[in-house]
Length: 368
Ligand SMILES: *Cc1c(COP(=O)(O)O)cnc(C)c1O
Image (cartoon, rainbow, N blue to C red; front, side):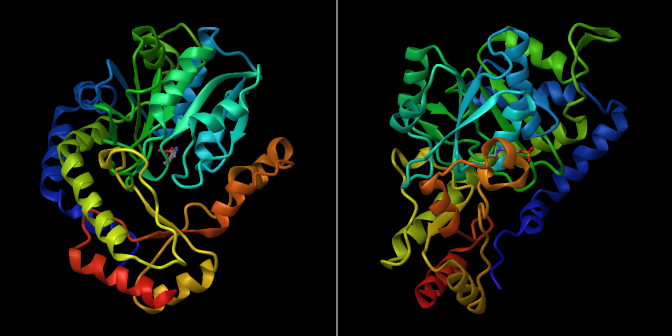
């Protein structure tokens, strides 16, 4: 059986380095906001090419705290609209509603599953004050045009880069396009910790300072609380693990691209719509390899019978979730709804071998 994603196998490659690192953290006796967090923040800011990085507890907190910081600065106020692709993972939308802002759902580009500048511009109203561009499945959204549009219209731009660590276009990485970006280091992401972890990268020093307060009860100095904030800190141990894994991110992304190439060159069936890469190959880091088929359940069953496990990202769009029934439930978003009915994620991992990828290609042909 070729599993959809074998996390344990991938993590075991780093086992001895991770154990040594954990011993170091245990021995130093500092477990929250110490040198590992500061070191990771420096290294990840360098990697992304962003002036600042603030480590936080998870990806949702990274997005939520950034929007909350903009509210603290008076750049956003309760009820303001935040444009976001309608076919995103639910956390993008939760960050917006958690801050009492209004998600303005935008239909994506069908070929890339991402926000397009044209689609975004059509959705803009005077209520919209910020844009959350999601680099879904690992491919950068149309950032040159989206960033230009946001500049022209005076809109704040946040990237949801939780699936796109290392994706790069015109020399600019995911996380360095917007005013700020939220990253998740959930274990299955392209850069994954051994538990929950996240970070914000941003351009503005004042925003980074506010985020450092907000993640820590609103406090920069112990027992002095300047604003009200949650406890959304990044652990020393997770930061240390991330420092071990960061140097492997580019080679692992390169391997994901090789697997994607085998799939894209090998799969030739009119019934399977392959994912499109709109710009340079490096603008996609293949967090997921997502195809579209009309008869999804039967396709997945036949693949499973041929020894290939698949998954669905995602079965239900945010506006169809019960959690959002009251505010978004009435919306009709046909492009997004069709995507959610038809997408299937094939196995994708830097640990896949060429032979396994070739087996997947054969299984796909036998399953259509
Ligand atoms: C994983 C993910 C998040 C949330 O990250 P967590 O660390 O799980 O909170 C947000 N947006 C997208 C697109 C994601 O894939």
